[in-house]
Image (cartoon, rainbow, N blue to C red):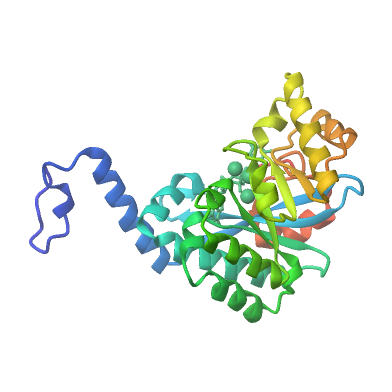
Amino acid sequence: RAKADGRGTYRFFETGMDARAQARRLLEMDLRAALQRNEFQPYYQPIREVASDRVVAFEALMRWNHPQRGLISPINFIPLSEETGLIIQLGELMLRGACADAATWPDNIGVAVNLSPVQFKNPNLIASVTEALEKSGLAARRLELEITESVLLQNSEATLTTLHELRAMGVRISLDDFGTGYSSLSYLRSFPFDKIKIDRSFVSELATRDDSVAIIRAVTGLGRSLGIVTTAEGVETDAQLELLRREGCTQAQGYLFSQPRPACDVAMMLDRPRLRVSA
Ligand code: C2E
Ligand code: MG
Ligand code: MG
Ligand code: MG
């Protein structure tokens, strides 16, 4: 049991709080301090058009550059940021940063930013997107917002209204990780998505499972019929890319082309078709 230092700094080590709760508490304090210290930055991973083999956009992926622990993946801190509400600040940082970076890229290159369901419940979302676009001067059509099905599960009228408002601004909306959640086809009817991102679990099993091929075929077909772009996530091999090409998948993203890298590497990623070395 840690002793209090008289100023209450170690109060959270009091007995009765289990190890898990302590770890969470520490992580939360660390996250708050990291926000103050500006330790978060977007990394960028290219998204390529399969037919032309050209980069058309970059997905912004949040990284925590921790002074001791090094680069930390969002899967390790997004859940707690969502529970504590810190995701609102983090999300705004990402939006502003990604729009500012993208404004310096060629005009035909877009940027995709992931949004948490928690951000959707925040009444300021439209204002933050508007501000990020205005401050950066980025054209709205170059911004894509990626949401997962869980946003639609909230299924409130408010969610749909927000999505329609964003789209009316000219921003494009993508449905991320398609195929992992409830994947109800009614989502595709309830809102006119611009893009479906096929989850990487289907792509990684393409070589070994015929049913994954069938699923890719079905989703790309659905996209074609509905006029929705399809993007395959997690493309790691040439064999996967060839299969996606054959099935008419519109875009591909994955380590085959590049891992996510810092903004200073974007020019290089635009110049060189493949950058498989680790970031
Ligand atoms: P996501 O949006 O589905 O992003 C794709 C994830 O797959 C990224 O993980 C990316 O680094 C990884 N990836 C890309 N290509 C490959 C590949 O070829 N093979 C494998 N094995 N993985 C690949 P990352 O960066 O760790 O992000 C994980 C998730 O965290 C994201 O999944 C997204 O849901 C969330 N996330 C990331 N940045 C943000 C953010 O700014 N805001 C919010 N709300 N969520 C974010
Ligand atoms: Mg995403
Ligand atoms: Mg995804
Ligand atoms: Mg994912």
